[in-house]
Length: 274
Image (cartoon, rainbow, N blue to C red):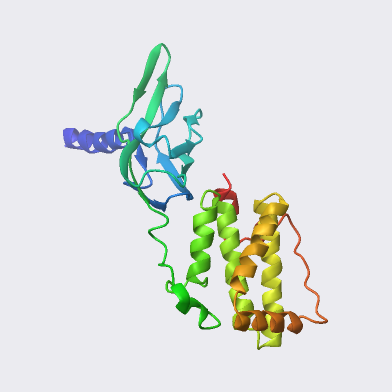
């Protein structure tokens, strides 16, 4: 009986002292993006302890596009380490699928950094930005007020193609201009409704604030937005609808928002501006 009691007491004690294995909050970081895009991912490293800290290392096959922040872990007493993975591709980045891992390399006095077990697999797929666009709508695009929006993203296909193909190397400005193009489309669609037009005017002011923020108030960016607006009013029917929208705003005042303009963007402007 005494031996059995000792055994029962010993087993829980051993289990309590067992060290939990290092792990991540995901099994694989699977990334799909277009050329010229930037994305961020929240990553958590659990149960890293020991040594004098560690360095997070992205293997060379992915370093052109992938980085991790912070890349150094100094406080090994924490059981959870919050990290951010930044993935950024250029407009001329090669198209394809790229595999690699994020390693944890432990610091130990007097020894070279050693890579620990449990690296995080990373799969990055970069897709051709132009091939993902809807086709050129051709002359049928100008036969109606709204034109052709085959992917139903709120922007006419010809305008979407123009913005992506000309501003794809500046993700934040590209998204701000697409936001503006959506609002311009609403100006035409809702031009017959006075109250709706005044609501759209507020959205239009948000676009101006967003473009100002992402371009650091560069007047060239505002000129580009005006150029895109002109492209959207390229037929007599559209021009008349835009004039009606402007008339609907007579006597009304549209105010700017407080802040630096970043909150007026409908996308994560801080992430895309990195």
